[in-house]
Length: 137
Image 1 (cartoon, rainbow, N blue to C red):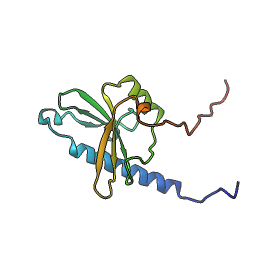
Image 2: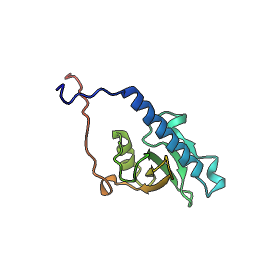
Image 3: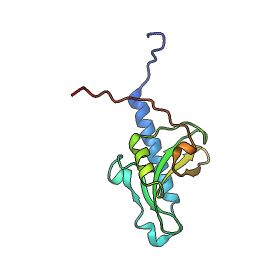
Image 4: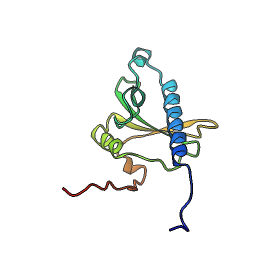
């Protein structure tokens, strides 16, 4: 095992990822527009309520329909892999007409973006990477 062990600053990496995520969410909020009558009702859910709703921003489409935006931000390219939580996928499936993954990329240079509508499996491969180990009852 020592041959594959690598020393890294997990806490530092996590904080950098959180900061990048907040930056992406703020950029998406700043870009939201088109319906000034609805702008006051746009909510930064992950900041106001916490990061467990399954989406980051509660917004609206131009036709006034509710949009639940899960923002995924990278400094890299559009096809850079990203993480989804079980909860985000559950909300995407349950509220598929409202939920959108908002992919913000190239954020350190010239930010670009696109949206993905559920089911995510039609756009990306979802690969389980962790297991919850719960004790037998």
